[in-house]
Length: 105
Image 1 (cartoon, rainbow, N blue to C red):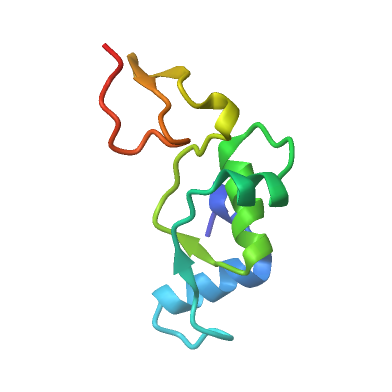
Image 2: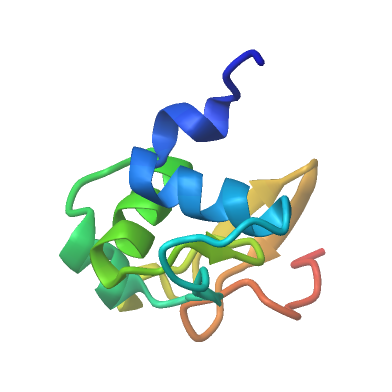
């Protein structure tokens, strides 16, 4: 079976745990699944990492979490009030997150 990009990012133990669980085989433990949106945690586990995917892999590995429902960018307080262009839409950064914020224009 060909490798996936996920397999290259995950530690082998974690990939095997997830693979066994989805195949209804017995893993070493039940996979832990969570969602984290916290810039302090990201900066602690992945300081200076610019690639959002790689940064979150480091966060989840560091916390011992196997899976996530997805993730989005979290911003430190200095970014508050700024804006970014996302899929052609300008969005304002408020309260360090973009979640549920309407377009800036």
